[in-house]
Image 1 (tube, helix red, strand yellow):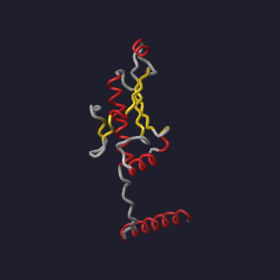
Image 2 (image 1 turned 135 degrees about the horizontal axis):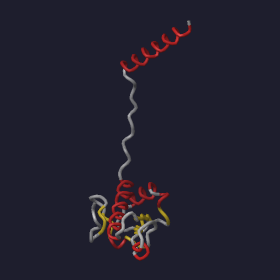
Image 3 (image 1 turned 120 degrees about the vertical axis):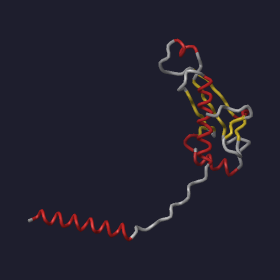
Image 4 (image 1 turned 180 degrees about the vertical axis):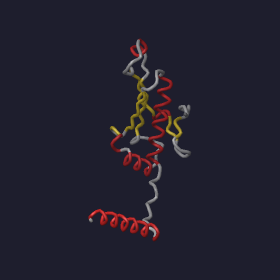
Length: 142
């Protein structure tokens, strides 16, 4: 699990989100936890302004806005983490989640499927099974 690096978040070998472009917000997490839940701001929100980012090229920005369209609010991608009791671990989880989402959105689309035809053997097996089923049903009619 890669922790946030001092210079920024490495997404791919060619792209690193600078720390200056990340916005961290902390709040109290919901759920059980006793007194600790009422006093610590362990829930983490990590936001990155995709529309205003200086590290993205035009093609990358277009691809991200197209693929992350419903997730972007005002051009910013926001990720939350509250599954851990410690803020430090939630920070790491939010950073990992943001990196995974951006890397997945930047990945090139998969190759188109090349249509294939059924083999002669598979066609013959299918027809043989159909004939056998037909014979079985004919024998029931008697």
